[in-house]
Every structure is written in structure tokens, then in C-alpha cells.
Length: 220
Image (cartoon, rainbow, N blue to C red; front, side):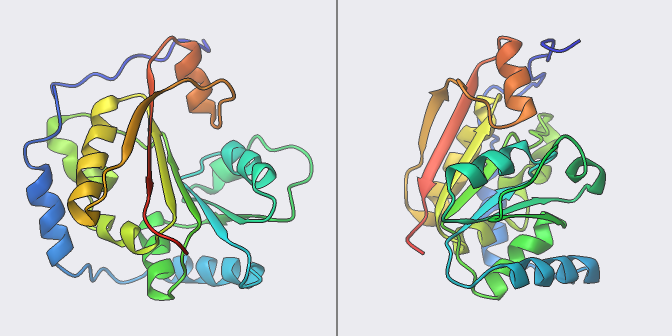
């Protein structure tokens, strides 16, 4: 069935009470996980496609890449990176020719984000659309703002946009971003008149509420 997405099931009634502690611990501790060679190779191949001048738009966790296609068409002057760790997802659902400014990359975001930061690459726009919310109370460390890689995202700059069907997820993301950047994100109810992802369309057509967070992390 198509429009039958279930609401988020969680015991949380607000942002996690350990959020600030976790975010600050990750800020103050270097993340030393070694890079996987296949992620480095994928990153280097993607950067060879970039002319070094076009502003970069990153569609992080792009899934089947519908969002990346739409973003590449909407931002023709940008070099658009659609990154997902699943080769199967990246290979599905995109008939026809792709825009010349679009590059799909099979890579783990944890390594890809860190490689961007290490090489001094700055983003113009950064999309994190409908990440897995990991809604159980004990799953905070699995959410991007509870992960050790999270402080790296602020180093990449640009306009960050995230969307979710679980408001608490974006409330936590807003608090984490404000804690590290000193800037207050905009968190708003979202009406997806033209959905960017299959999940966004399904959630909308299932009658779920949608939310969007945006924050300008700095000029490129």
C-alpha cells in the first residue's frame, strides 16, 4: 500500500535529556576512526568531477536520488553531490539522462563528511532529508546530531536544510546546532507541495505532519 506510512512510535516527549552532554563530548574529543579505503576512492573520484569553482551542493543520504536530480535542475550553477552508502538505492528509480552538474557517489557519509572537511572543501548548500530518526530513547547516538561526526558538519558551512516527519528530531538538531554555532536555526511546519524524496511524498500522502529546519552556517 502506498499512502499508509505509520506515525513515529516513541516514548520521547521532547528533546533527549542527554543531548547537550553528548554533543559537547563529541565537540571536545577528536574523532579518529580510520577512513575506509573505498570511501577515500569514491571521494577522490567525485572531486575529480568538480571544476574547483562551482559552488557545491551536498544531498546527504540521497537514497534513490530523486532529490539529487531535482536539486541539480533547480541549482544548475552548482555541482551537486548525491551521496548514499547503498549501491542498490543509487541504481534505482532514475530513468533518462542526468544533468551534467550531478554526481552520484556511493560512500559512507561519516567518512565523506570528514574528507570534505579535511580537504578544506566548503559547501554552498547541504541537504539532509528525512534521515532515519532512530526514535527509541536509547538510540540518541544513532541520530546524526548524537553521532561523533556531527561537529564536522559545522565546518562545512553553507545553508543546511533538514526535513523530517518527527518534530522532536529537528528540535534536537536545532538545539545541537545552536549549542555549537551560537546561531538559532529556523524550525517550521512544512507543506511539501512538490516533494523532494519518495519518503516526503509518502509521509505527506499518509496525512503526516512534516517539518523543516534551515540554518546558514556561513559563507563559502
